[in-house]
Image 1 (cartoon, one colour):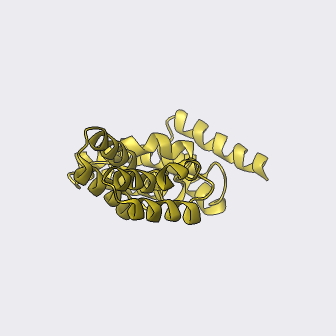
Image 2 (cartoon, rainbow, N blue to C red):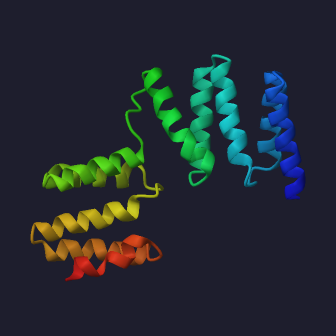
Length: 181
């Protein structure tokens, strides 16, 4: 089955490279319809976003990036598409000013400068606005660290419990013992 998917994807890419943008677009769309759970579906979405952008259809391009990030968030294509999505959103004036990792690293930066209240807001915002992102467990951990630094042992334990129950297989769970000390 995968060989068939790979063959179709290769054909679509070859069609695009030959300059048949409309033909490639149709092939990528057909691929997603036929194989929505394929490990290559993320590439089809990414290529559709690029094609729409090249055709001047920026809203459509943004929609394909959103579809990619929502449906294939852990894929290589999503990794590369995140920044393009943000930039395109800014270009369209839609207020997309950041993505989850920017939010997380901003929180870390604030925490390092001992701006606990601001850091706490960033981590809580990440959890609320990007609940499926890869940094949610780490955001909970950092909230526990903030509680611990403030002397709020109960708050630190609460965050450790959230991590241990909801994110038990993550690196943050391995570090939870530091919140309980």
